[in-house]
Length: 212
Image 1 (cartoon, rainbow, N blue to C red):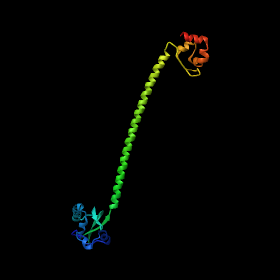
Image 2: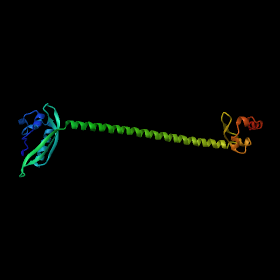
Image 3: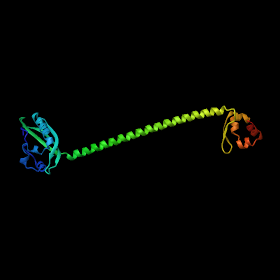
Image 4: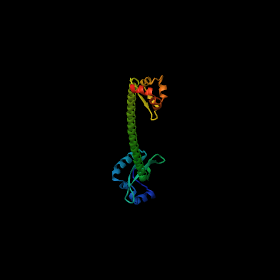
């Protein structure tokens, strides 16, 4: 009604509240609104009513079994043919399950975001550790290369013969001094020979090595 009093409720509304029509008319319905929501609801509704604006609000409303349910209350101004404001036509919908589903969705979304953050942190830590391991390995390889280069320089410039061969006596590495000791024209010529069969068994070569 124009004075913001309820003048009609339908059968579904009465079934929801479990109260008589008389108990729901006027401002009787406000008694069923949760005490923490009542005053903000009154202020919001009167503000819309004074400005002849649409009203929309959600609040806790006591059901017939005494349980408070979240409801969405919506109303639109009703004007007579001559433009006179005649009150509001409104509807009320139970949105408890919707809000609970929304809450669960938000909770699940927050959990997924937290898991994503944790997983991202784990991956970042793993990448950081991997980069550290790669850097350490690279430094070790560079140090080994420098060491091998120094050793090879010493071997190549040593005044005495240095070689490396396998179990069969096949030369794998030789230095210039050994090449000169054994009278080979080239390194390839020496590498083609066998330590046991061609060098050590040769009296001249063996003597040359022992003398040096």
